[in-house]
Length: 500
Image (tube, rainbow, N blue to C red; front, side, top):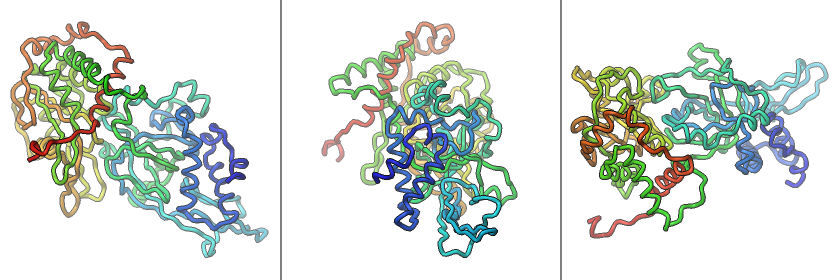
C-alpha cells in the first residue's frame, strides 16, 4: 500500500479529469502480485476514491451531473439522484481481456472497467476470446433521475461556485448537445425539468432499492443502453459508472450548522411557529398544526406504522384558474406551497384538476416490463402538497378515481401500489401529505384544521399582502430547516399505558 501512495497520482484535479487513467494504474498495481478479483478490485477503487474525496472541499470540485451542461466523456461526476428503476438491466462485461498483437504475436492483458468502451491497444491488437485469462463480470444497471421536488436551496447545498468548477474541469460548458436521455414516462412529475442517467454498479456494489436517494461518484460517458438496443435504438445514453455511492437520508440535506443543543429547541420552535404564522396571515393555531405536520415521521413499530400526521387545511380560498401543469395556478395554494418548499428539501405539488387527474398516472406501472414512474413514486420524507381548491364540477373517469384512491392509500397506510405484470405490490413510503381545500376535503386526513377567516382574507389577497410577510435572512432559514429535520428524528418513547 505504501508503494501505491507513491505511484498513484494524488492530485484531485487528475482524479476528476482522468479517473480511468488513475483506475488503470490501480489495476496494474493490484494485479502485480495477485490475480484479478472483481470484488477485491471494486473495494480497492472505492476506498481509494473515497479517501481522495473524503474532504468536503475536494468533493465539491467534482462537477455535478446536469443534463443542462455538456460534460466531456471520461470525466468524474457526482449525481444526487433517486433510483427510479433499480432493475433496469444487467450487462455481462469483459473486465480483463487477453490481447494478441497479430503482427508480432505479443500478448498483453487489457483492463476495461467503469466504462462501456471496447478493449483496444491499437489497430494490430485483437481480443483472444478463448484465453483462460479473460475475466467476465456483471454490472447492474439502474435508471436514476434527479430527486423529484428537490427545493432550490437543497440543490445548492453541495453545488460549487462557477469559478471552482472551471478550475476543476475546464471542459464543462452550458450546452446540452449530445447529453440527452429519453424516458419522460420514467420521471414522476410530468413536465418537470430534470436530469436522468443510467447508473452502472460494479462488484461489490449492487443497485440500491427503488425510490432511494443516493449520492453517486463515477465516470461519465455516453454509453450503451442494452434495453434500447434490443428494441433497435442505437442511441448512446448518458451513463455514470459508479465508483462509489452512499444513501442520502432527508435529514442529511439539512445545513452543516453546529449541532443543535437541547436547550436551543424551544427557541427554534418559536421561530418556526412565528414564520408559519406569518405565512398563514397570523393564524397561530393553524401554524402550530402545520409545524406538527412537518415534524411528523412515519416509523414502523412491529406491524404498525406510527408517527404520520396528514393534515387538511380547510377554508383556503379557491381559484377559477385551471391547472394545465403540476404547478399551482391558485395564488393562495402557490403561496403555501412555496413556503413549505423553503423549509423542507423535497416538496411536490399535486393540483386536483380534473383533466390532470384523468390523464396522469399516480402509481408506478411495470406491466409492460419497464417500470414507468407514477406521481407518488417519491423519495422518503417528501412533503406532498395537494391542492383541492381547483377541483371543479366534471366527470372523474376510472383513472382519475384510481389516482385519488392512491393518494388516500398513501395518507392512511403510507404505502404506494406498484403495478407489476402478475400482481400489484404494496411498497412502503414516508410522505408528509398536506391537503388544501375550500371545504372539507374528499380525502380523509389524520387532522382537519379550519384556518381563520382573517387567514382566508389574507390568502385571498396574497399578491398585495406578500410584502407584509417579513422575509427571513438565509441564516435564519437554515436554522429553521435544521430544527425541523433534527426534531423529526429525536428519540421518543410511548408509555405502556398509551400503547395499550
